[in-house]
Length: 325
Ligand code: ACO
Image (cartoon, rainbow, N blue to C red; front, side, top):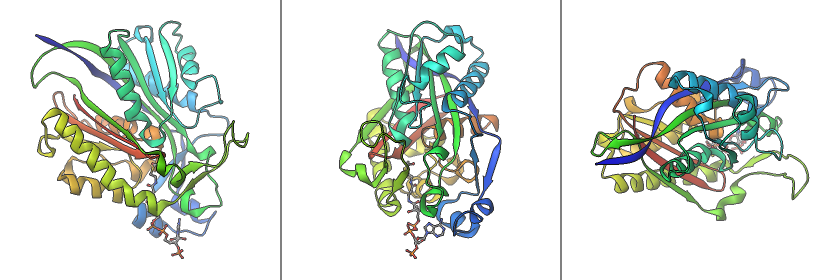
């Protein structure tokens, strides 16, 4: 007996070259390296070059994922790009990636779930692949949050960075059993009652402007750990696994205190946590594939490992995914 699964064939990432340190920020706003590190764990973040767009970074990450997977761009028939910072209001940045890769078949679209975007995109691509309508997908998270920040607001501008990460997902018929590779479950949640706690104060149908990111940081922090641990518990219930079975915990990289608090509440050992927030800051939908690529580059993840991914962000939206590498 076989089971149709979405298997990760490869992962890639792209970071802009410009590094913005906490010391650099202390020259712009009333803050300090000590405050930022203590409250968030962030030391530095990358900032896109002038004119460098989300789709350009997404294409770089996609090329790197295709090379890692050792497959041709022409084998891709689905592109799902998670972003809250598209190049333009429309068309979707995903079609720019598609054109840049020379792909003229299948479907490409953007998906917007803020920091939970990558988990939402993974769930969407997984469902489309398992439906039989598509065979191989690029799932990308790419953001230029630096363009949404109010650089005079010290409570938000220190938190975010730019970058992109991507995975190649392949629909495969795996032999049924505990060793079957691929995505085992995805769990998605949202609760729009919290929409004003983290939002952008502009948009095409409201102000006609791009707007700036606004956040009630303490409120986000207050809900984050409980929402993350609840949805991870649901992923465990759906699969029969527990935190003891997890080899690698690859969380959305918003804040080291949220990551460590969630791991502690779930009973996941610190040595199993993949952390990049210190070097990348919060790159929203890009943070999970960036962290995954980082762990792979360090050769930490091996075939058959059980990976737990989770994210929480604006909306609020939140979600988790369990996959066998
Ligand atoms: N440097 C120095 N002082 C600062 C800074 C800064 N960069 N930012 C705020 N402060 C000050 C505040 O003005 C306040 O001063 P006051 O007491 O004189 O009024 C003091 O520090 C404490 O402010 P709080 O907001 O209460 O600080 P807190 O300990 O909550 O930390 C933080 C703030 C880091 C934003 C925290 O609330 C947090 O991490 N929240 C979650 C935010 C987050 O992760 N968002 C993204 C998740 S969703 C997504 O990924 C899109």
